[in-house]
Image 1: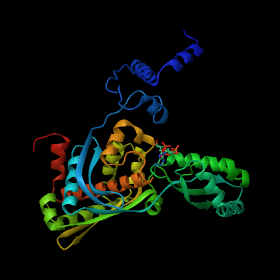
Image 2: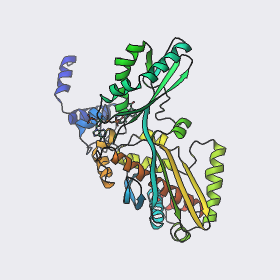
Image 3: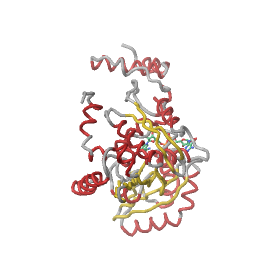
Image 4: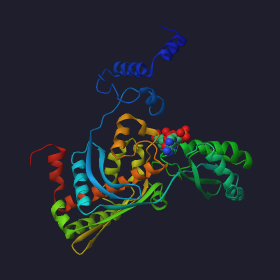
Length: 398
Ligand code: NAP
């Protein structure tokens, strides 16, 4: 038996790739399985094992397709885009592709960012309501000092606001930040921790008992995010002429409206949904996986609303996405395949000026979500949904 110190020394001498291989071999032995397909990632193993994933044993592969061209008329995304979509759901890419065709033939989709800001809401515990009130007053009076300390932690970080929520002895300070091209959760968590420990707790003697008090609200479905927004809040719209509806979507506007009203409006309200849409999450998930976004933020990305209205025989469509949490630097965006997918969209790395790549990506995603909505609701209206899934999802001849 090797001594513990000898084992530690041997491990320290191994490269990250060797460590990954040793871990995988160990797991194969433990579980009596072969993990051959999991081996040999194309990403930088030393970067991924220190920044993205502990106990690294390899990689998971998900098929990647593309839809487009998609004509986008945004403030940051202007022109025709090819959308990378990573999914295992047969028919999804074909469906989004059809929606892109309808949008592009209709002349493109108008998109803009209504507001933006990522949040972190630490929780403070006071002795009583009077102290909670005094604490909130102190925070409001010292916003400038808090902002200066926070912005000293990272040149890309800007504190936009602090909104206090108070209930009895609990005070939640909802910090909202601009984080340029980064999604920002690491940046803001580190910055909040620093300013709380070094400044707020020392000056007020009020203790922060959790760096996140669930009012942020990260990776959970919540009306607060739908109403107040988180990350990027986007709006997009277009009118599809009746000729394009007939040629590309193979249906007419009255059937689309029948399905839309009874499914998205009535069905969603009967089921108590937060998201009033057909499948925003499908498109958000496929682009998130392709481009290295945090997949748990698909929750926030699913909260949007789709509006359809008949204008004569034409179809007006708008999508509102209140909480799209994306970045083009940091996190999973630095991994090789994800970086290449961002390159397809022309947004890999930091933008010039900084922040413009993340905004462009957000606008493209909103446009792609609209494409997915238009196509799915049309497929339901023309009774093509099951047929498409049979042929494209199961590979059956129909
Ligand atoms: P990050 O990986 O920490 O990278 C952000 C850093 O990128 C910045 O601090 C900045 O560092 C650098 N950077 C270079 N160019 C930039 C530009 N143009 N704009 C902005 N930053 C730029 O990423 P993050 O976005 O803060 O965090 C993302 C990660 O957080 C993901 O892996 C996600 O899964 C994870 N996450 C964390 C929490 C949490 O509670 N901590 C919650 C949810 C998700 P320099 O100034 O040093 O260059």
